[in-house]
Amino acid sequence: MFFEISRLSAFLQRVIWFKGPPRGMQLLFTLYALMIALGSGFLGALLGLGGGVIMVPLMVFLLGIPIHIASGASIVAVVATSSAAASVYVRDEVTNMRLGMFLELATTLGALTGASFVAMAAESLLKTIFGLSLIYASTVMWYQLRNNRRSWVNKPNDWLAEKLSIGGSYYDEARGEQISYGVTRTLSTFGISYVAGIVSGLLGIGGGGVKVPAMNVVSSVPMKVAVATSNFMIGVTAAASALVYIRHGFCDGFVTAPVVLGTLVGSYIGARVTGRLRGMFLKRVFVVVLLLLGLRMIASGVGF
Amino acid sequence: MDRVRFLELLVSRLLRTGVLMSGLLMVIGLGLLWATGDASCPSGVLSVSWLLFGDPFLEPSHVLFLGFFILIGTPLLRIVASATAHLLERDLVFALLNVSVLLILAVSFVLGVG
Image (cartoon, rainbow over all chains, first blue to last red; front, side):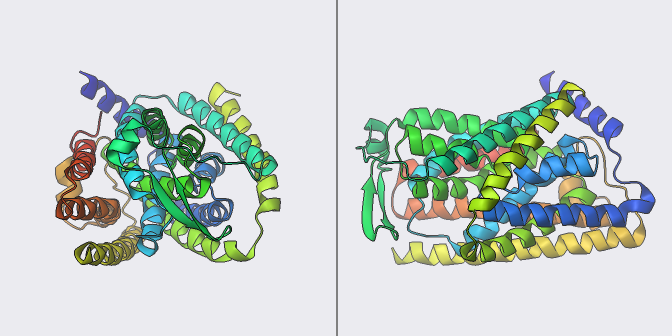
């Protein structure tokens, strides 16, 4: 019953809202999508955000694509950037692979839940949730700018972390020493990771914005390790969502292909430039940009 | 330890090849779509058999979807490799964790619904 209803609604949404770009405009449409993805991938790499957070609203507002299709394109692009990055850093010394593999169980389950819900969710609901998450991302970025150096205290492993031996250590280049750390409240972070997976599946974004604070604040994992470990998990999480999106026909070829290609190139260039550029000014700008995009998204979802 | 290191290098190479190959398929698929003006991307819930075998095989939109699939397959490779590595190191709990993640992905694909 559940399957039938969701499939029917997925079918209707696609037929009613999106029949692909009109015939004469395919080339132009593809080029626009490519440019949006290029810019978002570039900015995402500079800001340390996933490209999806910027890309999805731009596609919705500038190209008039339904959010289901925009998220479908974005989630495949997230897989692409994550795999491209992972091919360079399969083993860096910062990522806590054991913690990542444990939490991956929660994020993939969440992604499956979230992406399945997309087929049943109305455009307006998804837009509102996306808007809220943009405002959240803006707040987190603002908070980071204000508290640049948060004091971090090392704590011992809790029982679960001890059992799975997921505590670790890494070499901190800034401090010039090997720093070891324990993982606390592992089960809570496991639960939050499930929610992060839902957000990722629901909105077609990486969801690092939920996982990183969970690991850092709840489980007292050092910030650098939390960021690297979150990136490590994103590829598999996005793959689970992408499979569901594809099955529902939310991955339109004319949108998804240029978006994937554009994001790959954009984030590659962004990653090259980012060492030479201080992101502070850009971050300040994006605190405002993300906030405005979020409000606009909610307004559009509520029906203004 | 040596075998694990070998696996990591293999995965790194496979990831890069996978991303490049899927990118190439997407470029070719888009080119074919423009050239033929054929916008017949199937709509609604897609069948597993269409996704894998197409109708006909390698029509423009099917080339695109094969590109998507190879791309989505790349993180799977990493999991398969780490499951193997954990088995080699006799770390059964983590091997089991990796296998369960693979199972969840299989469910995502076959059912397309939670």
